[in-house]
Picture 1 (cartoon, rainbow, N blue to C red):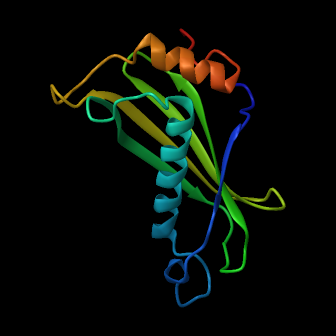
Picture 2 (picture 1 turned 30 degrees about the vertical axis):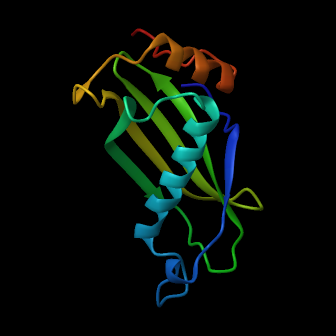
Length: 144
């Protein structure tokens, strides 16, 4: 896979309760950061989407914790779509500090979901075009 560019970045304000008794951000809190980044990413890429009818659901997560985040560290969540298949997409996110050090990396598999029918559906061409335009590359999964 080609080197990914993270065009979307969301600064995160650390909260007092994010930090555990060891003085660093608790690993369970990272998921709320990733949710914020994901929500902002899709609001940017698909601002016209009717979230009451069409959506995406997380079906798989993989996380690698690489370095501690302390209460005074300025951080941001970076988000990109690595590839899109027929019904799913691979989202890559990472938490970085203001020096560019990667603190944590998360890979999510998201499935397109029809909220009216309560079933998965194919990812529409509109989704693919919107994300490809934002990412400035074709995000379609390459055939093997």
